[in-house]
Image 1 (cartoon, helix red, strand yellow):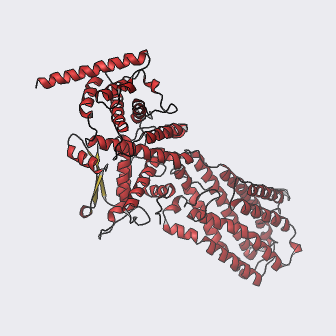
Image 2 (cartoon, rainbow over the protein chains, first blue to last red; image 1 turned 180 degrees about the horizontal axis):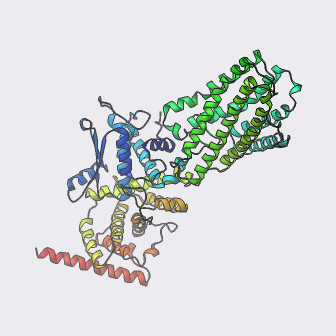
Length: 160
Length: 462
């Protein structure tokens, strides 16, 4: 059966819980709000290509755009992003990684447990998880850009 | 409900007003504009209230049990309406033509949602118990000046508590939703109107319960004056309800970004653009774009000589890299093909027709905020570079790409020179047409060769 992905409406409810609904925000604001909600430290680290050429090359060869390291003993997640990514790709890559944290993907297989923002448990299929994170990243980018003009944000308080 | 019994409004006011509203809602229910449950329910409600206000003028026509039965049946649409409103706020019932979504505070408070979900059970139970109780111990319910016993009061008054509770809860929800959290003034006004309407109806029910108390406990000489004062209050409150609720509903949605584009075209555009840009970055970062390293190094030197801006340099580099990928299709870059590039350009052009969205999303995207501080449109290097790459590789469709618009653009001609020098595309693809284009191309070529010479001299010196 096809997994059902998070809709913009459900995502807006999560933003409401984070205090970001009806506001313009970027990936750093989303990370901060997520940090407070999940009770973990989230670091968005920009990796300068000149200082870390091997990181850039490894990432580019692997077909990925960013890396997330979750450290359960320190209750922290570090997201590594190459600084040379084009602006849109950079924003979406950061939001994609944060979406994995929001969905609780970092907790699957872990015995320690922890908080997640999403109401439902993480998807089991790896490909589906990536697709879910892509979708969430796009919802977040649009909601963050539109702020109060987002129709989904308005609908939460629109009784009609 | 004691309408038509005082002189403040003419006796026919409420029956005529509610009958007219009932017809309006019935017509609305028949149109395609507002499908769903709301209009038929409102129409039935208004019709019953109109009939009730007529019947109240003639209490002598029905025996007590019949009066109780009729009154309780009349209340049914109102109770159903309040239940529906609670279920809508809990997110299990959708407003007509809307998807079900929990409202404001109820969205992330599970207990509040559970309380709202319990509304039908609580209110219909109270309604049923009131019906049973008053059928066992009937009262002349159409006669507001009739005396009630203490038992009659305790049969009916506690059973009004569920409806009072849910009306108060709904009022609180709409009052919260009219606060500063909602940025749109129109939406706030709408929520204020709905709060005023629902809270006024709450006061109407409180007034009715107080009326039962007066009928049961007030001294004989005070019964009529107090009841008359209550009628005046009742009429005033109902007038507020009759104005505030339609105003709240009529305010409609606040202007928002085009939802259809937002749900369909823009995610598709973002995905396509993200994939094209990401793959270009990966191919470039992993050194897989052969023959370009030296040519792009000279191109940077030429850009210095031509005093190009950062945006123009970015366009040159992107155009050359994209032209390289388009000219030699790669198995590991299925995202960058002439077809997908044209699709992206078409989507972007269609999308930019929506001025509001275009304005909102053309701002720079960074890690820090959704839109740029100064509100200026960001420099979109990819769009130009993609058009240039398609033109250089002879993949441009006239409908989407117009190469002549690059005639006087040094960055484009520098990209053409670099593409030719790196043997990415055959020279016949790159002939400039027109005197301006030829002049610009010549100066770009001169700058490129000058940069190459300088680099060679630097290399020979060590």
